[in-house]
Length: 298
Image 1 (cartoon, rainbow, N blue to C red):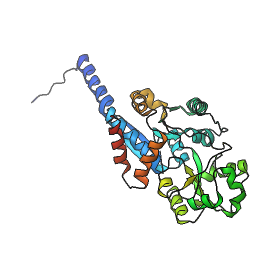
Image 2 (image 1 turned 120 degrees about the vertical axis):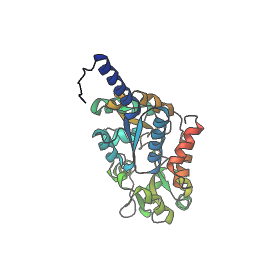
Image 3 (image 1 turned 180 degrees about the horizontal axis):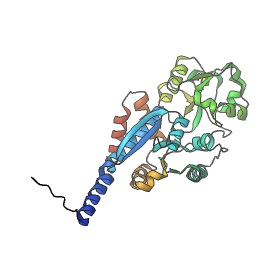
Image 4 (image 1 turned 90 degrees about the horizontal axis):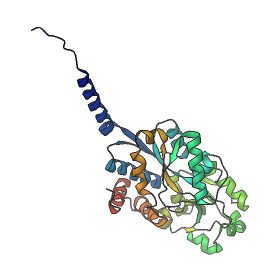
């Protein structure tokens, strides 16, 4: 049989191009959501991933539990991830290397403007809670020394062992700044742990004082007592999605969808969600799904 080559009409080419374009816009695009290596950040990453999947045609590649702050920060700069949950205080002091700003609105404005200008990283609306650093002691230590504030620690710190996760010793708003700000001297060398082991250590009595995030689930689990930062050392840590500008330029719906979580998670709610994961052992995927359902977002 003789085959003949017929010219393809311009209309056929346009039609084929339109089909390819629609296919690429609807089902083919993928965004990558990352997170740090502890339960709250993993849970926030899962919330964002599930919401994007539920409300857009985008596919989500998860790189949760990726590592600490700088692992995620480098990954978003290098386009290895597109989105991850970050905290204003962390961005201000650790990433931007700027001085502490105590006012929450000013802190958010500063990190939003500077990170957009320097790295094309866009801050979306904060989730609503302030997971600030704080200091926690065992109930026994608090009662024995009648501790209420960080300043109360100064006189008794030489009798107390301090421990924290590794990252706390590498930050401007971490250990060195804290002890200088308050004039603290603890007993011996501070203990250093992976984040997941820190609370187990204080629960066993290996140390007396640790840093904590105010929404951490194990605070309730180990009946730890939070002290007051009476000289305002720690900046506010309002969590929000941060996204590469290139992604928002291509897929502006990502901002619209993630902003649905803006202001929806207060301190108590985040603490309860963390408790379900950290203490009750519920999977972050299920906790995230249940919470989105409770908000009518899934």
